[in-house]
Length: 410
Image (cartoon, rainbow, N blue to C red):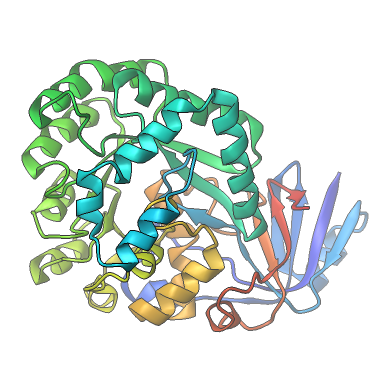
């Protein structure tokens, strides 16, 4: 069985070598009046509609895009799923002048999300999270990362990762798992002691049980220092895990320089970069992961220097940072709009930054992120023939028809 998408304005977002960087970010070749052949959940062929119809004469079904844009499914490389409850009252407190850091030092913040997670049963967490992933799929997110980080104990973190594995088996979307073991400090530990426990107990257990694809660390004055992060990241490197770093969100502590030196695939937030950090991205294989929903939700400045990064030949990705505290937004078309309006990306750059580049960050660029023969048929037909309509119609869901691993999104 196979079927066709025909008469589409196809943006394949291909590149000789991921990630796309600098000027290539905004360079989008188009297959005008293009067609795609889907078989067994994979892309079998791509070309002009006339040629595809000549070569594939007996499809089981045809989807006529009627000139609409066809793009790869969105890849969200930074979420904090699974979680088990919202923190809207903390949002109100921030509106009234409280800082995120002060909320976190009290009973709120990450510690509160940890309590919410720990009091819910596994099935309650799975049900809550599945409803959120269906929302994500409806707005075009066909692959994404999930993180631990709300467990705040060895068993809590392992439980969260085990829940991610169960969600992988229940969802059609492509999911990767990241161990954010250095997210916040559990109350009963000093920072150095918790890092020791993570390196000696938690990281080996997660790796042995095959629960993680990557690791992450939050380098910040309220979290962990570069020196503590370095010890942890070196241990993860020895296990050949992908490295990720939360860096320079609220202050500059040298996290970006460390992450670049260690070859982290994704370095995220980057609101307080120095000019030296910006220049170093252009000479690296690391991707600058920008999170406009967090910037918007927290009314946070300064903005990350997106245009300077691109001018220095950096690779850029855009992600949601979907979490209950500082970025309760999973809607990738809206996040594209925020990136365009707040950070100055073009629609073409934002397309690269939400498809092939985040796929590279997650280590799945050979499976998803572009429309190429042999990749998963994760495809979106938009309700427009103009790419700029995505940021222009902020808040609108532009998905006319979607496919995840070849299945229609209902």
